[in-house]
Image (cartoon, rainbow, N blue to C red; front, side, top):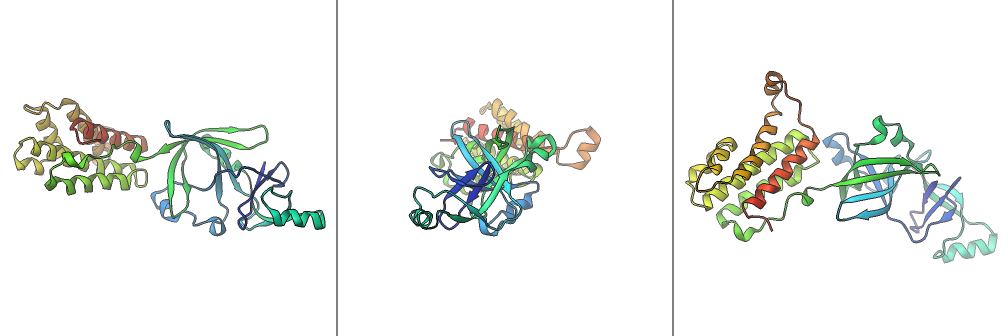
Length: 300
């Protein structure tokens, strides 16, 4: 099915051979960019008029509980400029209806799209791709978890939200001593800013720093010596498992982050035969950090 967007009036049209028939009610349609490098986040399309050969996503359903979104993916047809198509009058287009009555024909200039065959031509038919949906003003990150071709050749994709805000719990600042609030919030903000925008190694590095900050500041509030603030994460892990803290699960979660962090060092990869950290490892580090916040009681 073809998709046509009237950027002046906002009407949406579709059709098998051409975008002829108005779509009502108006679907949610967003610009899409494939994210292959961290720099791609700095080059998101501004709007439909300034995005050469863009993809777009037509949302059919969204489940906020599972953070799963389904819809159809389209790519630009021939070029990014509007093309003239004969269309049926939209029920809310009074001017168009008068034009049809006068000339028996209505022509609209539409940004035109067709099913995104480029997606199915990618390795593994696009499974696992990271997509930015939105524009340079505001965009969200989504992972392609399923791709299907419908009977009308539309490309139906199922997307999973990649959102650090869905993983790291909101911090209860009341439980953090005023002297520690700034350092804790800064460390968590660095994780949120880097999550799924920087490389996996960079995200894990921010999680490692945040884990050290959170655990050491919590121990300080529980009566530990101020020297704990200068300890490295491996030393903090050993300290938090000892009495009077006995936070064994906190130690284990922090150790996961610490071990993953070493995989960003080339000498460790070479000497121990380890694999390089990937985005799923970064997500695990973020989840481990969220677990630590809950364990020390600093999460809402």
